[in-house]
Length: 82
Image 1 (cartoon, one colour):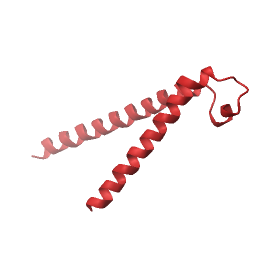
Image 2: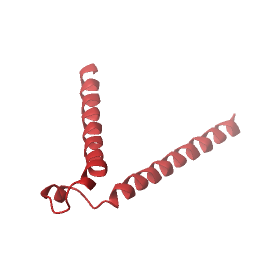
Image 3: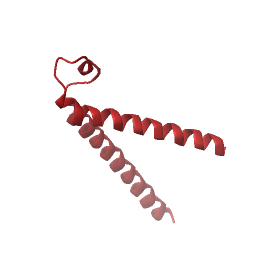
Image 4: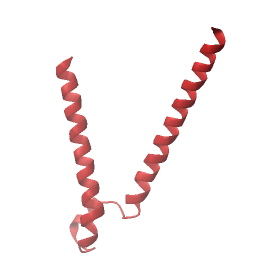
């Protein structure tokens, strides 16, 4: 199982680095490239550079809130029965 854990860790690291590199290039370097350059066709419009992380953050906070709420409800029920 240790080899599988290392493979999953490597895959997650590679995915994270790829996303970081893509986003960094998109947000920091692309605004300085001419708008008619061919590289622009590989990227979404600039407004999505803000909307995607904000949406991901809202979804993450929603799932965390639901999780915490469920854990609190379960612990409350557990205390009632004992």
